[in-house]
Amino acid sequence: MAERSYDFLMPSVNFFGPGVIHKVGERAKILGMKKPVIVTDKFLETMKDGAVQQALQSLTDAGVDYVIYNGVEPNPKIRNIQEVKKLYLESGADSIITIGGGSAHDTGKGAGIILTNGDDITKLAGIETLDNALPPLIAVNTTAGTGSELTRHAVITNEQTHLKFVVVSWRNIPLVSFNDPTLMLDVPPALTAATGMDAFVQAIEPYVSVDRNPITDAQCIQAIQLIEGSLREAVANGHNLDARTKMVEAEMLAGMAFNNANLGYVHAMAHQLGGQYDAPHGVCCALLLPYVEQYNIIACPERFAELADIMGENTTGLSTRDAAELAIKAMKQMSEDVGIPKSIKDIGAKPEDFELMAENALKDGNAFSNPRKGTKQDIIDIFQAAYDAE
Ligand code: NAD
Image 1: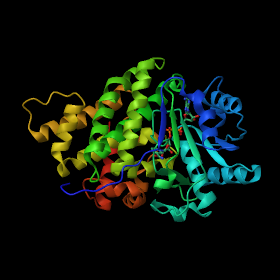
Image 2 (image 1 turned 90 degrees about the horizontal axis):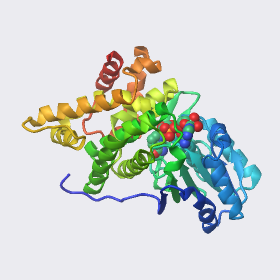
Image 3 (image 1 turned 90 degrees about the vertical axis):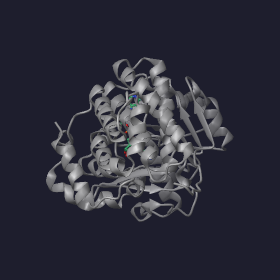
Image 4 (image 1 turned 45 degrees about the vertical axis):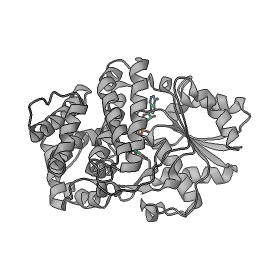
């Protein structure tokens, strides 16, 4: 950590706050968008006065035409990005506006990737593999959340192999992000919990990542404190605008942090659970978090002891190791409070799949920044611990 150099990446314009959804049309016009493909799902498209209807009104007011793709699936598949590409080409579109959570943004990014970088996205998995710019992209975010509206990651599932893979490139970063907490007031408790736990993990993994730096540390600390102070409230009462606002600020901070300091084994392994069992990403992350971080403690116990303090635990008089253990306990408590299940059994995980999933997790782009370097057997053991959890 003594010597470092890094780029710091995020979209150039980020709209935040109640009501910013009304600026989508104006911003699309400023970017010269004449006919964007709106990338979303049927549920969000038909939600009365929801994000899609408000964004479409704003585009109409600004005189911007559009076509709609409403086929986004959770854990977006290669077929989704191919369908968007087809619609884009057939309709004479010139840009993309994603409206939804991480799945919508990643579908839009994936389509953009194959429109300008070649049709076979599986060949582009990895880090900085893209030669060409994507079509202009605006991301309107409706979950808090993945941070995908800000990040250089596109996470896609190969429906043939059940492998979830990541294309990481600065070219994937949307030109503009929108985060309007009023769009999240009706997110149901289980989805609030799952997406909020994703943001929590995305603030913890960069804090112990080998690629961390003082800027990402500051973002992680603030994000964790905001989540500690608001996720339980947002789950308990979705219409608490203050809690929703803090969760959006937290997910943005965590997104910026991991966009630059990267993640770790929680995400590398969660992608295997998501690809194999089509389970919600935030739940996969939450189920693995304490077991991965328990394994990681010996790599940087002092960082975990700091995490306990950041999460508001009383570490006075404790040894570094004991304080670090308290951080793991606090992670479990957060999951339990917001109603995440206990074991990866609960999302259909099977021990006979652990070996292949462990092999693939070690190849996932997120594995390289984990603070402790594991073997395949280590990863199998972590899956087993998360399976045996009661
Ligand atoms: P999601 O986008 O899959 O959405 C889940 C469900 O929530 C959908 O059915 C959707 O219709 C519904 N929904 C979305 N917004 C809503 C709202 N405001 N009100 C009510 N319902 C709403 O969920 P997600 O957790 O945001 O995204 C998960 C995906 O993002 C995973 O595939 C994950 O791997 C990926 N991800 C990407 C990045 C990245 O940087 N690219 C980071 C983390 C995760």
